[in-house]
Amino acid sequence: MGRGITNVTDNILDYIRATTLREGDTLNRLRETTAARSNAGMQISPEQGQFLGLITNLIGARVCVEVGTFTGYSALAVASALPPDGRLYACDVSDEYTAVGVPFWQEAGVADRIDLRIGPALETLDALAAEGLTGQVDMAFIDADKENYSAYYEKLLGMLRPNGLIIVDNVLWGGSVADTGNQKESTEAIRALNITVGQDDRVECSLVPLGDGMLLARKK
Image 1 (cartoon, rainbow, N blue to C red):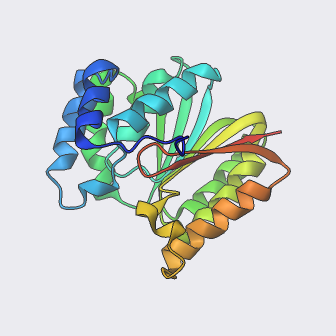
Image 2: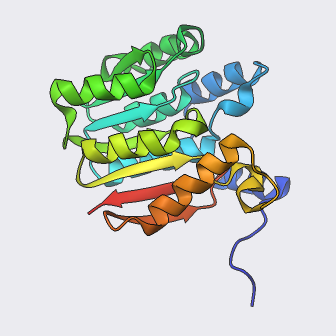
C-alpha cells in the first residue's frame, strides 16, 4: 500500500492546470506580472489561489484577514470570492509590492472589498482587534515572515468567530521541516507552529500538501 500522497511531477501539475484550474484572465495576468520579478517564488500557486477562493465560498466568509499580501494575487483570489459587501483586511509592510496588485484589484472590480494596511502585521492585527474585529473574522490567511508565524496564529485565533478558519502557507518549507539537521530560525518557527496547531485543543486541523503545504485550523 502506498503512503497516500502522489508525487506531483511537472506532468501532473500540467494535467491539474489543464483540467481543473479556473484562473480568470485578471488573476493570470497578475501572476505573469509577478513571475517576472526576482522574488516571484513568494507568490502562491494558482491552485492555492483557487483553493482559497473555494474555501472562502464554502464557509460563506464575509470578513477575512490576510497577513502577507506581496503583489496581491491571494488577495484578489479571496476578494473575488467575497460577497459585494465583504471585506478583506490585507496586511503587508511593502508599498512597492502591494502597488503591483492594486490595478488588478481595480480591474476585477474588487478593490472596494480590500482594505490594505501597510505596517508591521502584529501592530496592524492589534489595531484591527481594537477596531472591533475580535470574534468577527471568518477566515484568515498567513503567508508572511515565518519567524512570527506563531504570534500571527495566536492573534488571529482570538479574532476568529467560532468555526472560523486560519490557513497558513509554507508549512512544509520545501521539505526542510522534516530535516532534523535544518535548524534555521525560519524552519524552527514553522516546525513550532505545526506542533502547536497539531496539539491545540482550541482547533481542529489538517495539513494539506498543496503547494508548499497549507495548514488549516478551524476554531471550535
